[in-house]
Length: 421
Ligand code: HAM
Image 1: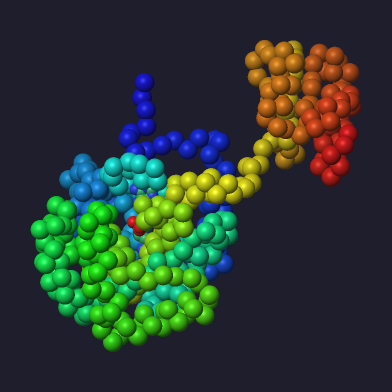
Image 2: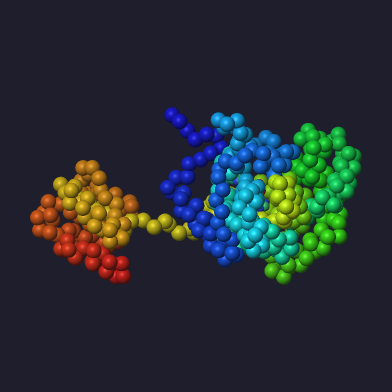
């Protein structure tokens, strides 16, 4: 029997209410902050991510699904949404629109990771990008958007972790300091960190190994070694966050797994668990568009993982509205033709109908109606056809009446106001 590929899942009907709820609040939040929807393809040229996300990152190096298409072009399933949003910004000349251009997306993302709870090979992101503005006010707005999104979902037990990792001016000096510090501990680092020391020293700071963590705790802090411009940007951002009353903790160990970040980086985490369960993250990427071949254009954004949000909503037992269901169950015996026609008329009158199928007994049909949680069951059989009537049963009270077929729609619509028959 075929199964979903490792690290992917089906989203079954009973799960859909969570997804619908999250998507709805994502769109609503986007609207409140003036973000417009952008959909980009699931596939992009792989080079977009090698250049954008960075050759040295786990995502670009180890986790991307890459294949050659029939023309020999190397194509990737998108591992994230920021580089595609910047590609779209450039491709469609969005620099001529009022800046920043605020875009949001809901999209699957693919990463060949070791699957575990909240970590999949196909996951889904909701992301927000503000492209074309360098001011710290836009960073504050992005963080405030992320905060409002989670609060509206009902996820209140969360906190923001914040850092600034500087710019190409100040980062080389900081990295040299970091390397010098880590060189002292070289022999006690885990094998991954020994490699990071050469390839990507920033990532030494977020190693999950216990021993490496205690070394990272005492390491030089990027936000204490910023150039004057980055420092001013970070001071202003923190003062905006204070004015907004947004609680954040500073952590020099927050560096994020993508190479495009400059200055601000942040994550939103649930209080109950550690960084493994990060709900969302983002930051500023002032050099990304230039890296992709465009003019220097700053940007800042944030993305959250929908699977992780669903896990947390369930864990916190947040009440999520049920999806709308048809109101009517149409039970019938020996009346297939008439039942089909009646269902058609009801639906044309915007009344949702689930029609019984097959040869079930009336009792079995009523049981199914009960299970479907409909408001009314309409019953039609030989007798009713002959008399031009139908049975109408209120499922909440089990009260049942015979009414003329012509008055059915009116009766149901009346019932929308007064649920008694
Ligand atoms: P990211 O932190 O790699 O950032 O992913 C964003 C969120 O997607 C994570 O916080 C997590 O909730 C979820 N996520 C990531 N990988 C997985 C996975 N394998 N399984 C389940 N959920 C996952 C980005 O992708 C950036 N593009 C965010 C951004 C937008 N930065 C600026 N703008």
